[in-house]
Length: 271
Length: 273
Image (cartoon, rainbow over all chains, first blue to last red; front, side, top):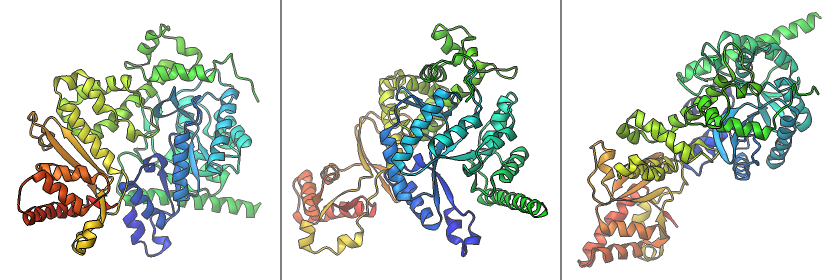
């Protein structure tokens, strides 16, 4: 990727316009990760995406982690910082996973308080991402989109809309993916994630090891129709194909976005 | 705001229960049994359906918890895995995660305490060189992204005047470790089977992006390295070398010490203090 960025003679030749990093992978003293990050940052804007903020945990926020995050942000000057609507720690122990929250008023109040604290520490609003989930709570009275909407209203945070996660969770919990998109506040979505998943028969598993499937592309077009042009990233963590294939998939997203926005403009003109 | 559907357990109570079950060593069903709870205890908390019952849904997370960490550790300790075999390594990590629960936000740290744990585990007690092998693999991981420092170049060393040589302070780069072993672990690293029970000191360090290690065969060089952990002058390093070597022609000792320094510089081991 770095080689391709450097080989580009014009911005149009760049394989990507910006790069997303997993924040925790760069919270290290030095070596290759930090060197590559500095070189990438010199070429294109970078956004920071974390997996360990544990916004929903009943444990206290990890002050040292927040300090490290703020320090990295000071160095990288990211366009934005995001993490997930989940909990990933309990009793001082971490699970290194994105565990789902019950969508209850108690959890909403708890998460909102912590988002406020994080935003105060980072001195900027953050984007909160919806996760793929394999269970939901029998007693929860809110839908996920109601929870996210209320969180946005209470904290001023934005949303990182993971369209693949909406698709996966909608299948696993039999809710309407379209209802999710319609339920999310119109101007809150600051970034979109796309990814591949695996069909396990009894459920869909968010694996990031496949190309984006037709169903997710279709939902992406619906998301663009509702939210307009939003910075979009395709996540791929396993079975990573050659860069050309990844770039082609990323350009497919840009093509869909242009087409959907052009259609919307046409309808508006006709109306 | 709609009310929650039925009397909800507190967020803390739910997280405590689910964390306990997701990290149970033999799955959620056995975790429930271990807590004295009936198999359907989760039904009031997790919504199951004909595709997946509540326990099966939580088991997805339980499996991901264990196998994600196992995969990271298999990548970090490939020689330990090759020595133990996949099944024994799997069981070792099951025991490790019960005894040493991950507490750091980064997966990078999940293997930090495995060498120490292995030293207390049956597998490590049976073969006491295994913890030393694990420690070397962990050292490679830690040095990969430890603190940077600009290495001294050979041209810098050759350009020094005698006065500067006597006063210029240098030290080892932060990305280095001296490892004292009771077995010849360097031979296992090269795939030579069980190591001989012979004491060995290894120097591990990072040059550019690659981590290296080599056994130290000269006591004089080892003494110099221990001195160079703290800021010291090149002249003092040469004195340390001469002191460790004992008797010898002054000019010969100086030339030998300079050879050692030149190798260090070539390896990117020295930096200005």
